Image (cartoon, rainbow, N blue to C red):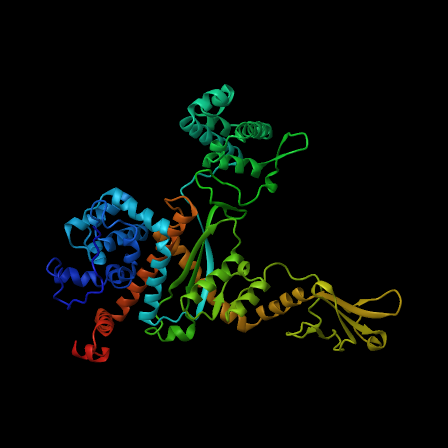
Amino acid sequence: MIKIKSNEQLEIEGLESWHGILSEKKLKILKKSWAETFRTFILPSIPVDKVAKLYSKSMGRPTKELNSIVGAVILQEFFDLTDEETVSNMALNQQWHYALNCFEDSDQVISLKTLWTMRTQIANSELYNEIFSISTDEIISRLGINVSMQRLDSVHVHSNMARLGRIRIMVRTLKVFLKNLKKRFPIVFEDKIDSTIIDRYLKKDSESLFSRIKPSERKRSLQNIGEDIYSIISLFSTKEKICRMKTYKTLLRVFNEHFNIDDNNDVIAKKPKDVSSDSIQNPSDPDAGYDGHKGQGYHTQIMESYRNDEDRASEEENGIDIITHVNTEPANEHDSNALIPAIDDVKSRGLDCETVLADAAYGGTDKIEKAKEKDVELVSPTLGRHSERQHESFNYNSETYCVNACPNGKKSDEIKHNKKGSITAVWYEQTCAGCKIDNCSAKVKKRGKGYRYHYYTISSVKCHLRRQYENSQEFRDIYRFRSGIEATNSRFISMTGARRSRYRGLNKMRFSQKFKALAINVFRVTGYMRKLGDFRYILSFYAQYIQKYCFFKPETVIFMH
């Protein structure tokens, strides 16, 4: 039996089925809290019909009310609670009961297994994407939030894994494989695995012994471990059942990431700089990556709307900034690769995104052009140093990128379009005759017929023109709003506990980070509605419901109310 309570059933205020449970004073407090926002925007957005498909209608025990269980999973991420704290709040916290519309004792008291099962179902089916999108879009639509201007940045986050060096990664991976082999194929383990390997890697505190290796002995120890791994891999390379083991595949991947085999079939350890950034950082979380600046873990990309000075002047109409896009990826993925997917996501949901502010990591010239193809203006500083070629003294056409004039204002006599996007501008000898500029940036052709020329690439001129624009007051007036997302990042990390997740693996990390970002939206809406006042909030909410399910005009309903 599948139990679902309809959230679309309209009840007259003051005559709700649960109204006698809560006093008027409590209701007044609840309607000013996050619980009212969650009840209004998040709970109706749960795709409970898709959740119901994950359960059997004829087999198993009756489910708890599905809306409230999914809501409990979401609230656990909101407040960064343990499983035991979540079960306790579900049973005893009246804010949770009001937010989840859960007033029956049979639905309020849940087991840890019920919570684990629902959380696993939501993560594996990726329903967290739909819940976040529908809820956020509903908030934007109902409150009339202007999302044409947005800003994008990333936050470095960690899964629930230990930080391991190269030696400990290899030792732990080999140790896990040997334990798994012993459990699944005990006879093969006894016959094939050498006793020295068992003593070295399966004895108590064997891993801690490797962590106490002297720096001078580290290279030799790395070589020894590589040879041990290679001997194990070679021993079972023809055993089909063992090769299909997940731990064997992980062991093979670790070996290929850290070692090479030379022509003499000897194991050669790679230098640290040659180890790829997408290599395994911990066998317990193979999806995690490595960033040379921030270390092991994941990046969470956050894009939110922002308000300029004109919008802030009309506080009632555009009162809050809202997070519109969240995506988590391994730390080795570069930020620039996140821009276009973020734009595609908000565009596919019908959000009118016209301008995106981002830091220099997102602002490659190719990304600006791709964003422009999607009718989005990317405002971002130019990455890297100034070009060594002296573009400053020349005047360029902003459309064709050809030289309009030399430092002395003379138009070029010839423009040559070379291969690979380079251009050569030429000034003949008679054109340059009588020039008073001693240190002209144009080079002199020394052999053959004398002339001056300026050789450059189109990409370098594009960067030069962008840097010129970045020095303007117009760019500063637009780009100064990008810094606001740093406050969002700080709140995302400190308030929801997003920096260190309880989960491992990319899919569960995305599940957790999406709901934590949704928490920021809920708390912002709650604060905004307090400013507007409960009266306007309640009227607009019930007017939209009556308009949806009845034949009255909302203006008439508000007047009658």
